[in-house]
Amino acid sequence: MSFSLGDFFPLKGSRRAANLAHVPSAGVSRSGAGKARSKRSRFVLEPMESRVLLSADAFMTGITANLTEGLTAVGTEINEVLATDPLFNGYVPGVVELRTMGDDTREVSPTFGEAMSISVDVAIADAPAALQFDPTGKSLADRFNYLSSGPLDIAYNFYGDTAGDEAALRAMDIDLDGQVAVDEAFKVLIVGRLQNYLADPLTIVVDQPGTDAAIDAVDLGIQVANKIETFGTSPLSRLFDRVQIDVVGVTSTVKNDALTWDADLAISVIQRDRFDLGYEAD
Image (cartoon, rainbow, N blue to C red; front, top):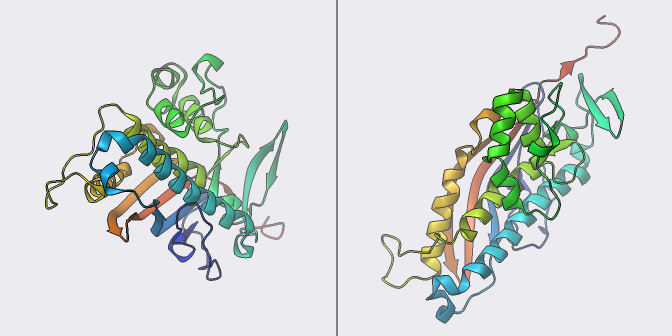
Protein backbone atom coordinates (compact mmCIF):
# COMPACT_ATOMS: atom_id res chain seq x y z
CA MET A 1 0.00 0.00 0.00
CA SER A 2 1.21 3.54 -0.56
CA PHE A 3 -0.13 6.99 0.11
CA SER A 4 1.30 10.44 0.63
CA LEU A 5 1.12 11.92 4.11
CA GLY A 6 2.17 15.21 2.54
CA ASP A 7 -1.46 15.65 1.53
CA PHE A 8 -2.58 15.43 5.17
CA PHE A 9 0.08 17.63 6.75
CA PRO A 10 1.94 19.98 7.62
CA LEU A 11 1.41 19.81 11.34
CA LYS A 12 2.41 22.48 13.82
CA GLY A 13 3.52 21.27 17.21
CA SER A 14 1.09 18.76 18.62
CA ARG A 15 -1.96 20.45 17.13
CA ARG A 16 -4.12 18.63 14.65
CA ALA A 17 -3.81 19.69 11.04
CA ALA A 18 -6.61 22.01 10.09
CA ASN A 19 -7.32 20.51 6.71
CA LEU A 20 -7.52 16.79 6.07
CA ALA A 21 -9.97 17.16 3.21
CA HIS A 22 -7.74 16.16 0.31
CA VAL A 23 -6.75 12.48 0.39
CA PRO A 24 -5.00 10.74 -2.52
CA SER A 25 -6.16 7.39 -3.73
CA ALA A 26 -4.55 4.32 -2.20
CA GLY A 27 -3.32 1.49 -4.37
CA VAL A 28 -1.71 -1.89 -3.92
CA SER A 29 2.02 -1.56 -4.56
CA ARG A 30 2.79 -5.16 -3.64
CA SER A 31 1.03 -8.00 -1.86
CA GLY A 32 0.78 -7.31 1.84
CA ALA A 33 2.97 -4.19 1.79
CA GLY A 34 2.01 -1.08 3.72
CA LYS A 35 3.74 2.15 2.87
CA ALA A 36 3.26 5.59 4.30
CA ARG A 37 5.03 8.45 2.61
CA SER A 38 5.53 11.62 4.56
CA LYS A 39 6.29 14.61 2.41
CA ARG A 40 7.39 17.79 4.15
CA SER A 41 5.69 16.93 7.42
CA ARG A 42 6.16 19.95 9.65
CA PHE A 43 6.44 20.36 13.36
CA VAL A 44 7.37 23.57 15.17
CA LEU A 45 8.99 24.24 18.51
CA GLU A 46 7.82 27.10 20.68
CA PRO A 47 10.02 30.25 20.56
CA MET A 48 13.18 30.03 22.66
CA GLU A 49 15.04 33.03 24.04
CA SER A 50 18.48 33.71 22.56
CA ARG A 51 20.14 33.75 25.97
CA VAL A 52 19.06 30.11 26.44
CA LEU A 53 20.08 29.12 22.93
CA LEU A 54 23.64 30.27 23.61
CA SER A 55 24.08 27.36 26.01
CA ALA A 56 23.41 24.02 24.34
CA ASP A 57 23.64 22.06 27.59
CA ALA A 58 21.08 24.26 29.32
CA PHE A 59 18.27 23.60 26.90
CA MET A 60 19.06 20.07 25.66
CA THR A 61 16.56 18.50 28.07
CA GLY A 62 13.85 20.92 26.97
CA ILE A 63 14.58 20.50 23.28
CA THR A 64 14.39 16.71 23.63
CA ALA A 65 10.98 16.91 25.28
CA ASN A 66 9.58 19.43 22.77
CA LEU A 67 10.93 17.66 19.72
CA THR A 68 9.78 14.25 20.94
CA GLU A 69 6.31 15.64 21.61
CA GLY A 70 6.09 17.24 18.18
CA LEU A 71 7.27 14.14 16.32
CA THR A 72 5.05 11.85 18.37
CA ALA A 73 2.12 14.05 17.35
CA VAL A 74 2.99 13.41 13.70
CA GLY A 75 2.87 9.67 14.37
CA THR A 76 -0.48 10.06 16.14
CA GLU A 77 -1.85 11.96 13.15
CA ILE A 78 -0.81 9.09 10.87
CA ASN A 79 -2.80 6.68 13.02
CA GLU A 80 -5.85 8.98 13.11
CA VAL A 81 -5.86 9.36 9.33
CA LEU A 82 -5.71 5.59 8.83
CA ALA A 83 -8.39 4.96 11.44
CA THR A 84 -10.90 7.69 10.61
CA ASP A 85 -10.60 8.71 6.97
CA PRO A 86 -13.34 7.06 4.85
CA LEU A 87 -10.94 6.22 2.03
CA PHE A 88 -9.06 3.86 4.33
CA ASN A 89 -12.18 2.13 5.64
CA GLY A 90 -12.82 0.19 2.43
CA TYR A 91 -11.68 -3.41 2.17
CA VAL A 92 -8.66 -4.38 0.06
CA PRO A 93 -10.07 -6.50 -2.81
CA GLY A 94 -8.91 -10.10 -2.80
CA VAL A 95 -6.44 -9.86 0.07
CA VAL A 96 -6.94 -12.25 3.00
CA GLU A 97 -4.74 -12.27 6.09
CA LEU A 98 -4.62 -13.92 9.49
CA ARG A 99 -5.42 -11.64 12.42
CA THR A 100 -5.29 -12.59 16.07
CA MET A 101 -7.54 -11.00 18.67
CA GLY A 102 -6.90 -12.47 22.10
CA ASP A 103 -6.92 -16.25 21.69
CA ASP A 104 -8.94 -16.08 18.48
CA THR A 105 -7.13 -16.22 15.11
CA ARG A 106 -9.12 -15.92 11.91
CA GLU A 107 -8.78 -15.02 8.25
CA VAL A 108 -10.14 -11.59 7.39
CA SER A 109 -10.11 -9.14 4.52
CA PRO A 110 -8.31 -6.06 5.87
CA THR A 111 -9.35 -2.50 5.23
CA PHE A 112 -6.84 -0.22 3.52
CA GLY A 113 -6.07 1.25 6.93
CA GLU A 114 -5.54 -2.18 8.51
CA ALA A 115 -3.30 -3.19 5.60
CA MET A 116 -0.88 -0.46 6.71
CA SER A 117 0.24 -2.77 9.51
CA ILE A 118 1.91 -6.16 9.87
CA SER A 119 1.39 -8.95 12.37
CA VAL A 120 3.94 -9.52 15.12
CA ASP A 121 3.08 -13.24 15.10
CA VAL A 122 5.66 -14.43 12.56
CA ALA A 123 7.41 -17.27 14.42
CA ILE A 124 6.28 -20.84 15.02
CA ALA A 125 8.14 -20.87 18.35
CA ASP A 126 8.90 -17.74 20.37
CA ALA A 127 12.17 -16.87 22.05
CA PRO A 128 12.05 -17.20 25.88
CA ALA A 129 10.30 -14.48 27.84
CA ALA A 130 13.61 -13.41 29.38
CA LEU A 131 14.77 -12.28 25.94
CA GLN A 132 11.56 -10.40 25.09
CA PHE A 133 11.08 -6.65 25.50
CA ASP A 134 9.27 -5.64 28.69
CA PRO A 135 7.18 -2.54 27.82
CA THR A 136 6.36 -1.62 31.43
CA GLY A 137 7.29 2.00 32.01
CA LYS A 138 9.47 2.09 28.91
CA SER A 139 10.01 5.03 26.55
CA LEU A 140 10.21 5.09 22.77
CA ALA A 141 13.99 5.33 23.15
CA ASP A 142 13.94 2.15 25.23
CA ARG A 143 12.03 0.36 22.47
CA PHE A 144 14.54 1.55 19.88
CA ASN A 145 17.52 0.52 22.02
CA TYR A 146 16.10 -3.00 22.38
CA LEU A 147 16.39 -3.44 18.60
CA SER A 148 20.18 -3.52 18.94
CA SER A 149 20.36 -5.11 22.40
CA GLY A 150 22.09 -8.25 23.60
CA PRO A 151 18.87 -10.13 24.43
CA LEU A 152 17.57 -9.63 20.90
CA ASP A 153 20.90 -10.77 19.44
CA ILE A 154 20.60 -13.95 21.51
CA ALA A 155 17.04 -14.46 20.27
CA TYR A 156 18.27 -14.32 16.67
CA ASN A 157 21.41 -16.39 17.18
CA PHE A 158 19.90 -19.21 19.24
CA TYR A 159 16.22 -19.29 18.25
CA GLY A 160 16.29 -18.28 14.58
CA ASP A 161 15.44 -15.34 12.38
CA THR A 162 11.67 -15.54 12.73
CA ALA A 163 11.87 -15.70 16.53
CA GLY A 164 14.16 -12.69 16.48
CA ASP A 165 11.87 -10.84 14.09
CA GLU A 166 8.87 -11.51 16.31
CA ALA A 167 10.70 -10.23 19.41
CA ALA A 168 11.71 -7.08 17.52
CA LEU A 169 8.20 -6.50 16.19
CA ARG A 170 6.72 -6.95 19.65
CA ALA A 171 8.99 -4.17 20.91
CA MET A 172 7.52 -1.92 18.22
CA ASP A 173 3.91 -2.88 19.00
CA ILE A 174 3.17 0.09 21.26
CA ASP A 175 -0.56 -0.53 21.76
CA LEU A 176 -0.09 -4.31 22.20
CA ASP A 177 -2.71 -5.19 19.57
CA GLY A 178 -0.52 -7.79 17.87
CA GLN A 179 0.16 -5.49 14.90
CA VAL A 180 2.90 -3.02 14.03
CA ALA A 181 1.32 -0.12 12.16
CA VAL A 182 3.23 2.52 10.23
CA ASP A 183 2.64 5.08 12.99
CA GLU A 184 4.21 2.73 15.56
CA ALA A 185 7.19 2.08 13.29
CA PHE A 186 7.55 5.85 12.89
CA LYS A 187 7.43 6.47 16.63
CA VAL A 188 10.01 3.81 17.49
CA LEU A 189 12.41 4.09 14.55
CA ILE A 190 12.29 7.88 14.12
CA VAL A 191 11.11 9.43 17.39
CA GLY A 192 12.71 6.84 19.67
CA ARG A 193 15.97 6.96 17.79
CA LEU A 194 16.11 10.75 17.93
CA GLN A 195 15.10 10.71 21.60
CA ASN A 196 17.99 8.35 22.26
CA TYR A 197 20.43 10.61 20.37
CA LEU A 198 19.41 13.78 22.20
CA ALA A 199 19.48 12.06 25.59
CA ASP A 200 23.02 10.80 25.06
CA PRO A 201 25.38 12.70 27.42
CA LEU A 202 27.93 12.82 24.61
CA THR A 203 25.52 14.69 22.30
CA ILE A 204 26.24 18.41 22.23
CA VAL A 205 25.20 21.07 19.77
CA VAL A 206 28.19 22.33 17.80
CA ASP A 207 28.73 25.23 15.45
CA GLN A 208 27.71 24.17 11.94
CA PRO A 209 29.64 25.08 8.76
CA GLY A 210 28.34 28.22 7.08
CA THR A 211 26.73 29.69 10.23
CA ASP A 212 27.92 32.45 12.55
CA ALA A 213 30.27 31.74 15.44
CA ALA A 214 27.57 31.60 18.12
CA ILE A 215 25.88 28.27 18.80
CA ASP A 216 22.17 28.92 18.43
CA ALA A 217 18.91 27.53 17.05
CA VAL A 218 20.26 27.52 13.50
CA ASP A 219 23.07 25.15 14.48
CA LEU A 220 20.69 22.94 16.43
CA GLY A 221 18.28 22.73 13.50
CA ILE A 222 21.00 21.74 11.05
CA GLN A 223 22.50 19.18 13.42
CA VAL A 224 19.18 17.48 14.12
CA ALA A 225 18.23 17.50 10.43
CA ASN A 226 21.56 15.89 9.51
CA LYS A 227 21.02 13.23 12.16
CA ILE A 228 17.50 12.36 11.01
CA GLU A 229 18.82 11.95 7.46
CA THR A 230 20.94 9.03 8.70
CA PHE A 231 17.86 7.20 9.99
CA GLY A 232 17.30 5.60 6.60
CA THR A 233 19.90 3.06 7.69
CA SER A 234 18.00 0.44 9.63
CA PRO A 235 19.30 -0.19 13.16
CA LEU A 236 18.38 -3.80 12.61
CA SER A 237 19.22 -4.97 9.11
CA ARG A 238 17.78 -8.42 9.90
CA LEU A 239 14.30 -6.83 10.00
CA PHE A 240 14.73 -5.23 6.57
CA ASP A 241 12.30 -7.62 4.89
CA ARG A 242 9.54 -6.48 7.25
CA VAL A 243 10.16 -2.79 8.00
CA GLN A 244 11.99 -0.24 5.83
CA ILE A 245 12.71 3.47 6.17
CA ASP A 246 13.67 5.83 3.35
CA VAL A 247 14.64 9.35 4.39
CA VAL A 248 14.73 11.51 1.26
CA GLY A 249 15.79 14.69 3.01
CA VAL A 250 15.38 16.88 6.09
CA THR A 251 15.82 20.66 6.29
CA SER A 252 15.52 23.15 9.13
CA THR A 253 14.41 26.76 9.25
CA VAL A 254 14.47 29.45 11.93
CA LYS A 255 11.84 32.12 11.33
CA ASN A 256 9.94 34.40 13.70
CA ASP A 257 11.73 32.80 16.69
CA ALA A 258 10.42 29.34 15.74
CA LEU A 259 12.64 26.39 14.80
CA THR A 260 11.02 24.22 12.14
CA TRP A 261 12.03 20.97 10.45
CA ASP A 262 10.65 19.72 7.13
CA ALA A 263 11.09 15.98 6.61
CA ASP A 264 10.46 13.93 3.47
CA LEU A 265 10.47 10.24 4.36
CA ALA A 266 8.77 6.93 3.67
CA ILE A 267 8.10 4.02 6.01
CA SER A 268 7.15 0.61 4.64
CA VAL A 269 5.78 -2.34 6.59
CA ILE A 270 5.90 -5.54 4.54
CA GLN A 271 3.85 -8.69 4.92
CA ARG A 272 2.96 -11.52 2.55
CA ASP A 273 -0.77 -12.21 2.46
CA ARG A 274 -2.95 -14.62 0.54
CA PHE A 275 -4.78 -13.32 -2.53
CA ASP A 276 -8.24 -14.90 -2.78
CA LEU A 277 -10.09 -14.71 -6.11
CA GLY A 278 -13.32 -16.08 -4.60
CA TYR A 279 -15.51 -19.16 -5.00
CA GLU A 280 -15.95 -18.79 -8.74
CA ALA A 281 -12.17 -18.88 -9.27
CA ASP A 282 -12.01 -22.12 -7.27
